Structure formats: C-alpha cells, structure tokens
Length: 433
Image: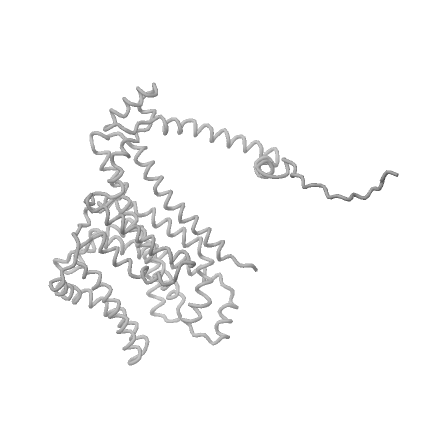
C-alpha cells in the first residue's frame, strides 16, 4: 500500500534568497532606485560623473613620464596619442622633482635621517593610537620628540639631553616646593625652573659635556627644510601639543579661580579672533623684536609655537563643548565618591568629554594639518611654496595642474587617514545606552 501522508519526513535543502532581495541589487533598489525621484536623481548623478570622468581620465592617463621639460612632454603626448600636448598630463615633473617635494632642499646624503625619523615617529604614535600595544612603549613615545629633533636638525647629542633635563628639573622643583610651600607654589616653580634652565644653564652645561664627550651628527639649518617633510613636522607637532594645552585651557575657562579663568578666556578669545596668517607674520617678523639682541630663534620653531597656540585655542572650545554635554549627574557622582577635582577630572569627566568630542577634535587636527600650507606666505618652502619654485624653472614654466593635483592627493591621503582613525575610535568607544 503506497504512503500518501502529507507530513514531510525530510528537510528541504537551504535555498538562496531571491536575487532582488539580497546583495547589491537589494542595496541599489533601497538606496538608489527606491522611488521615481530617487531614480531620476541617481541617473542624473551617474551622467554627471560620466561627464566629469570622461574629461579627466583621458588627461590623466594619456600623459608623459619621461620628458625633461614641458615642451618635450607635450611633444611626447602628441606623438604617442595624436592629441595636443596640453590635453594630456605631464607627470614627468613629478618624476623629476618628487624628492624635492618630499624633502625640500635637505642634503640628499642625509635623507636616511628623515626616513628614520618618520619611521620612529610612527612607532612612537602606535601605542598612543592603539591601546593593544604594550604600554611600556609609551616611554619611547615620551622620548621620541627629543630624538626626532636631534635627527632632523642634527648637532650635538647633548642638546636634546639638556631639553629633557629642563623637564626633570621642573619635576623635582614641583615635588620639593609642593611639600614645603604648597601646591600652588610648586606649580609655579614647575613652570619657571625649566625656562630658567633652558635660557641660562642648558647651553653652557651642554657645551661642557660636548667638550668632554663629543657626540653629535652633522647639523642642518632650517632653511633647507621643505616639502611634505616640513608640513608633517609642523602638523604633527602642533597636533600633539595642542591637545594637552587645549585640555588645560578648557579646564581653566571653567575654573572658579577668577585670575585663571580670565587668563584662559582672554587667551582663547584673542587667538580665535585673529587669522592664523597674522600670527605667522608675527612669528616670522615681530617676534624677534621682543627677543634679546643677538638671539637666534629658529623660524620653524617660532611657526610651530604659533600654530600650536592657535590650534590649542580651538581645541579648548571643542573640549569645553564636550564637558558641557556631560549630564550633571556625572559631576554629582564624582562628588559622591569623595574624589577631589583632579581625580574626578582624570577618571570620570574628562574621558567622557574627550569621547564626545572626538569628531570635533579630529576636525581641528585635519584643519591644522591643512593650514600648514600657509607657511609658504612667510618664506618657508612647504609643498605649495616648492610648487611655485618649480614652476619658476624655465623647463617647467606652465605646469600647474600636475603639481597641485599631486600635492592635493598627498594631503588627501593624510587627512583621510585621520578621519578613518576617528571613525575607528568612535566605533571602539561606542557604548550602549
């Protein structure tokens, strides 16, 4: 007798979902063609992209990489593709001058110092950016600024040692005077003693040590710095220093101490109310009038100081916004736990404020890095300044889009990397509600 039951005794194999209900087709239907209006706008956008790329891509790829002048480049493009030379890119200028765009006029036999310095910079930044790395690497992160200074500028090995010694002297002054005369006197001493050490004692002591143990490498003057190397030095230094300064200014602006609050508010408003280019002119010209006669204050150092102070003012407002966004209960919880001001700030309020402020902080960093191109106006040869110098050469007079396009691409790589890291950090710190 045959089995005519309606109960299935075997499971059917899994079937793939309908094509229109999954994968790229589903995404396109939901995001690009979800309605008549959306479909029309999508088609118009695709036509616009086609129109733009059909004009740009032939210019990019129908180009010359081997010419030694703009004239030869246009002749090579015409012979190879049968078009007018100005309708094809002349990437030969990048092939010939890329070292200058990256290193400026730094001596070619010393490029290894720049390369080593940037590799060590990445190693120093790694434990700061990624907490999965061993925390012991932070010691190298703390030492690297002085090591990098010595690698880039050269000179006596004892110069960065004397700079580090200034911080050590300030720390001991803080510890000793805080116990003897109070924390306020200790903080003032910690700020003043390093300055006194650097201005009066660091030079003579370093000279004596160098005469006893002459350690050093060839010195390179700042006038030979340029290109992306200069932009990275100014940008990274400003980024690293502006964050802690911005935190202190933000806390000072919310302080109950009238003098501290007034100073911080005045500094922030003064810096935010003046264009950066004005401060750069102050750094390049006026600052020397306030220095003792015969003082040689390096121009790049002056620019770094002004850029850092400018960025720290904006950073302070970003962080103050993060502090203002915290619920009042967080401050009350810190008081309920019996924490003093500094412990509550370090353990409870500031970590949350920094987390909230991540987009604004990274946006300030990106703006600071792009603003390093303004130094070309005061005579420093950043990539924009070098592009002008290259175009002044008779062989390359008339090259515009290739140079500025390459510079724009490099800045995009740096800034896009920072924005991606920002998104990674937001995802990593994201918590449920």
